[in-house]
Length: 363
Image 1: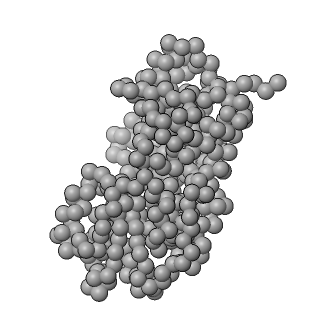
Image 2: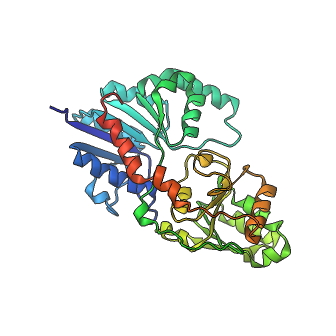
Image 3: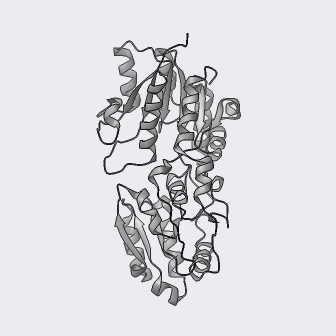
């Protein structure tokens, strides 16, 4: 007889009705597949919400305290017999994992979604992380990175002894919700940026690159910026300084951004740090090539010249050259970029691989 399983999933992830992204769809589908396999799931989030399929999940919210502290208190106050405890967006190799092991015999799996700084951590932070790896990695049974880049960074951060208990499971997207663009403008293409407006997303580099374009291109080029954030005022001021305000339009946040991609020819993502971008996957699924940087897992999905263009982060001259060539039709992407997502980065595949971590007693 198959052992019944009950798992806890801890997610330091705010549930926001006006920001439904790829991870929300993953949580909903993972819960459904667990239920179909007789696995009970308790979800621990910072807050409650009933948008989408969250009303079908068993959700416990931590309210004013951290998800980690709330979960520890929950385990002390309740008779919990979890077979697996899975964490998302929770800091790795902290005393929390030691405390969990004192309260539960569950297998602990941590999913790392966190990007690293482009120039790496300062020496004191590197030493701190390596010490934490020595002290607390033993209490984590499996480290999962959302890209090969992430797995390599886990090992670099916490020590080579983690090689044997680390693996990659790529993020994926729900393809049925993303319509594909049928026609791509070769000359004078349209551009969008889909990003939270903060310094690490590199939109200031895009402004600098546009400012260097030939006057005739600057007169015509249009780039729509989807997203919001604390850096918007800095970006607006920079556009004024370079006299490129007419080139950009702030479109605000969109609750259904994946339906927007097909209205454009290219997505621009000049980010300085990334783990594995769901926006890139959604853009490719809409048959919209991506112009992005060589950080994080970007080069694990973008092949330069095939489904987009890659440039070195912060290299505004390289970005300017790509924009100019693409806008004039001197550089074009002819392939159907949706294929790469269908073959390797679907939500179904992501859910199946995460479910296997629970179903496989060796995981």
